[in-house]
Length: 488
Image (tube, rainbow, N blue to C red; front, top):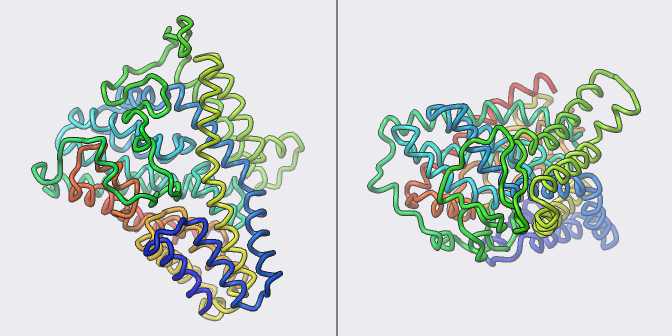
């Protein structure tokens, strides 16, 4: 009962009284600890200990991932990647390629920056992919963005969920990849079918894009970074592909595919500088992710080798990715761009780290309150029921709060104590919580308003592409996750 009151009170504080999510989560954890009999000292230990424990597990991972993404953003890698995908996949395959790429390879990019850059590019590509190009690209972008956040390491939601539940990062990476790729493909295909059957009226569902339109959404409700800070474009930065001042103009053009190295102007204005191939820009990050996955596979196979174990540690693997990306971007654009990217990354990662930490505080307090034993009485060893319950709790929280990250972490924290009682693998709880947190992205979400403004959709159109599209992905994901209980 006290847990339910704490969760409901946290939701009310955020939604009704517009209290910052960080403060609301801490207050909920303090209330639960005091009312559950932990005492003053036990409550403080749970709140501070939970905060420190999760950051000890995932703090550097989040920081390294965000910094790597900032480097790639400054290098203009996203625009070049979109052009390459269009060239390789053709117009018909572009929505599917966009959803998969955004949901996997680009998850190190800070979500608002990724959206502000990729949305204008998607809008310019839309007329080239045939009938109903705009809703298909908008849906693919929304599904890829949201699914990647909660399923794909180093997406901030996936990393936070793994930290709260104690899931090995390599296991989360592999399991998330297994879920996210079919989820985005199936959900995009379903939405494409609906749009081609007439579920889109350009006269009512489309409008001229307006940069000012992104301010129409409620301030402080950030779907993916979950903070009160404004969006990149709303904060006065260039609206399309120039959020960090890298000189790109995503709204004005779709760049040509860049396979071979070319000569471009130095960002500092000192003269021409050699632009490296796109594959080389992404290579360090991909190497880091492959090292994490390889470490998980070797661990499962019982292979123990000091060098392999060291390189497969997520912190070391992402550090290698960050150092490699820094070197590549430095060679391509110069030291000034690297320094600017580091500044961007530090600003972006701070709010994510604080939110992740307080999510760990609430989860630890719930665990210390003995909720696992109580819930264990209501669940059998059949894993379907608790996984569906995690999905429902996360979905309800997301509808109320409008934050994917907060709802996923809170739902995972509520049912995490059940795992050892009934033998449920924590990675399944993480995946189910992530899937539920995707349900019903709507007007309380900052991502909703960015997609509406940047892609030239009406509110009605955005409800179709974003709210319905991501909800379809949420349902598809849980249907894919349930059979995984036979494996984990």
